[in-house]
Image 1 (cartoon, rainbow, N blue to C red):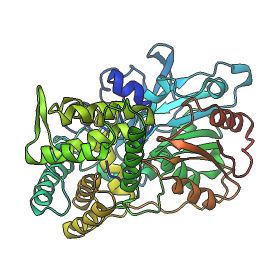
Image 2 (spheres, rainbow, N blue to C red):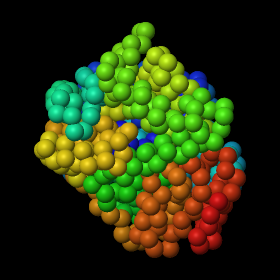
Image 3 (cartoon, one colour):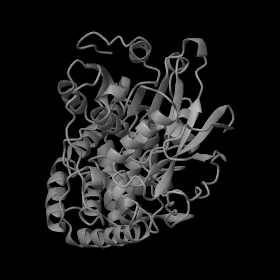
Length: 497
C-alpha cells in the first residue's frame, strides 16, 4: 500500500475472522500476461470460476447468462487503447443483480469497491449494497481492466517481495535492499505486460464504464464508488457528465495530490494513536495500557531477527507494518490487532504474519501498482524517493516503509506517468459525497475538498472511525444515501451523522 493511495472498501470483520476478502491486493491467477485479442479473434479463456458468458463484439449489447447462483454475467469487448479502436481488444467481465422491484426500477447502479484492484463483481455478489437501494436498480458490478475477469494482471514476481526485508527510510542498507527488490519486481512486470500496462489507468477504466453503459442500452447510470472507486467516479463524471443520473462517492481519493503524499501515512499514524488510547482506557485490551510501546518492542525484535512462522516466511519489519495497517481500517478489528501484538510480543509472530498475508488477498496488488503509477505524479529517481520517505518517517514513523516501497515502485515503473487532473464538475448533476472524520485511508479533508470543487453537490459527514461508511449499518447514513439514490434528494447542507 502506498500510504499515498491504496484504498479498498470491504467488510473487514469477516475478512479477518473468516479469512475472506482483505484490503489491498493479491496477484491472482498464474504468472504471465493474458493474450491480447486481435479485433476479430475470439476471447481467451476466462479465469477459473468465471461464467461461460459470450464476449460480445465491440459496441454490441451485452448478452447475459445465469451465473454464480442468482446472478447474471456477461463480457463486453473494449479496445486496449481507445486511441486505436481497431487495434487489440480485451474483455470486461460484468455481473448483474436484477432489481427486486422491476415495476419501479430506476435504471442501473454501477458499483466499484476501490483498490485499485478491487473486484466489483465480488462486491455485488457479496450483497454489500443495502437492499433499500438495491431493490430499485439493476445493480452492476464489473472487474476493472487488469482485475479478475477483465484481463487479470499477475506479475511474475509477487508485489509482497519488497516487504520481506526492512524497508526503513533513513537506513542505507534497508533503502538499498528495498530498491533492489522493487527493481526486480518492476522489470518482471514490465516484461510480462508491456502492451497492457500503459492502458490500465483510470481514464481507460472510465471509458470501459461508459462502454458498459452502452452495452446495457442505458442513457444514464447511477454510480456508487468507494475509496479508489471515487477516483473512477470523478474521472467518469468529467468525461461523461451527461451520462450520470446520480453519483455517491464514499471515502474520497484526492486526485490532485502527488503520488508520494504522506497524508495517508499520517492518517494511519493517527488511527494507531486512537487504537492505543482505546486500549489504555479498557482493562480487557490485550495490548495493554501502552500499545504503541508494545508495537515498538515487536519492531525492535523483528529488526534484530525476523520471527519464524511455521509454513510461512518470517515476520519481517516490512510485513509487520502491513500486519498492523490491515486491522486499522476498521475499529471493529482493533481487538484482532491487540491480540496479534500481544502474541508477537511473546514471540509468536504468526497472527501478525497472517494479517500481512491477508493484506494481499482479495484485491490485485499488481493492478494497484499499475494504476497508481500511471494516475499520479511520482519522483523519477531514487534519491528523491529516499528524501521524501525520510520526511514521512518523522510524521508517521510506523508507516513510512510503505511510503518508501510505493515511491520506489513508481519511480522505476516501466511506463510513463499520466497524472489525473482535478474535476471541474461542469455539466455534472449534484453528487453525494461521504466523509468519515477518522478515516485512516482517505482523510476526511479529501471529501471536504471535493465537495468544494463540485458545485451543487453535498457532503454528508460521519463522525466516527473506519474506512468508508455506507452499507455498514449506520442508519443515519444509509437512509440519506438511499433517499438520494432513489429520489435524487440531497441531505441538508452540512449534514452530520
